[in-house]
Length: 334
Ligand code: BMA
Image (cartoon, rainbow, N blue to C red; front, side, top):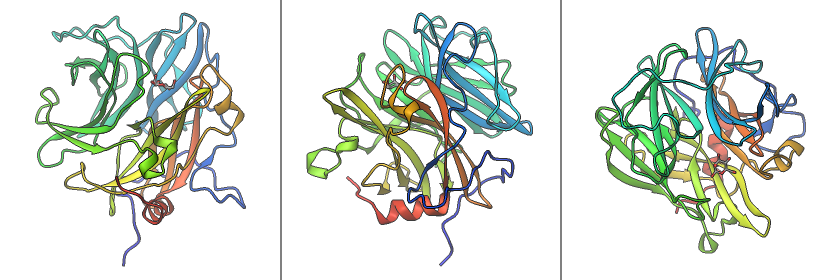
């Protein structure tokens, strides 16, 4: 039997730190967290839930910022090593387009996905309520807006890095106009990145009947799924309600390679829950919210970018082989 392995291009300069001796967890935090702290630049009080990809020998990203009116915007950024970042002072602006998208609307929780040499940004965009905005870029300087993927209300739009069955695929979570006390993950298909259909339900939140309180309120796709020999590795957030509000944790699933709406395995426990000071204290306490993952397939090293407490940006690490083995060994599909 071959070992489970990630597929794709090598990334030898991935940000990395070995697992601390004695650590029993599958995911471990970067000792230099937060990578991007609160008040990272004038007028910006928080930078979190942001997406990073390899680009031009280094890294590029799209970052969620929050200014002092607490209105969220997206900013492009570049960094040589995935840890030190230069964030553009002005929010992303789009070239002229003929979409009906509202360019002045709020923008948050971006993901960035490279497909056939083009980078697609998806994010939660205002359109009389939240839905999934899409833009494309090749250089992280000029961005072209495409049509919104769905009607409101929807969040957590996450593309797959290649077509499957001839279609682009996107995960999302249909939701409501508020703080959404419900939500399951769905998959939609498109021949052209414009018309989305052939919707499939992928997986639901867990409740009493599944013994899964950590993800009992809602779930949402996190980073772009990683193609592996065992299926698409999906890292996602699971949310529970408590007397003090929502708690956001991290889980993982393996989806069928050819029919990714079929869940093969899914962790029956969280892999990371808010514990570090910067996760339990911030503008919204008790949130870990992964939006991007870098992978070096030859070594199986995985670097996961996550927002902490809706305040700062952090890194956690894992080994793909270990993460897959854990997901298979501690699985409950429902
Ligand atoms: C969700 C989104 C995220 C945020 C989370 C916790 O609804 O708004 O951006 O991190 O709530 O506040």
